[in-house]
Amino acid sequence: MALKVHPSFALHAGKWLKTEVVKAHGVSINDLADAFGVSRQSISAVLNGRAALSADMAIRF
Image 1: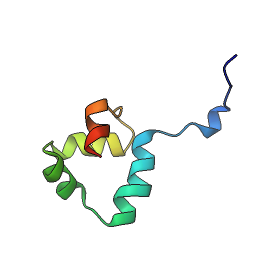
Image 2: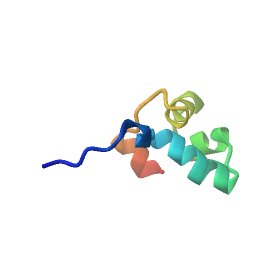
Image 3: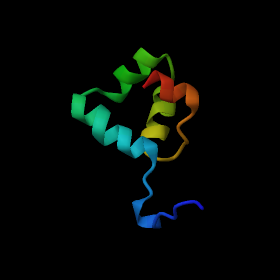
Image 4: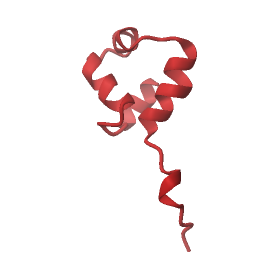
C-alpha cells in the first residue's frame, strides 16, 4: 500500500534547488549555466518550475 501525501506538500524540485542551493550559496544563474555547460534558459526553466529536473541535470547539481 502506497502512502498518500496531501497535495499541499508537493514541491517542484527546481524551486527547492533555487532556495536551498542557488540562493543559499549566492550563485547566479549565468555562472551556474556556464559551470554546467547548458543554456541560462534551461537552468532558469528548471529553477522556476517550468521544466522538469532531468537525471542529467540532477547529476550536474
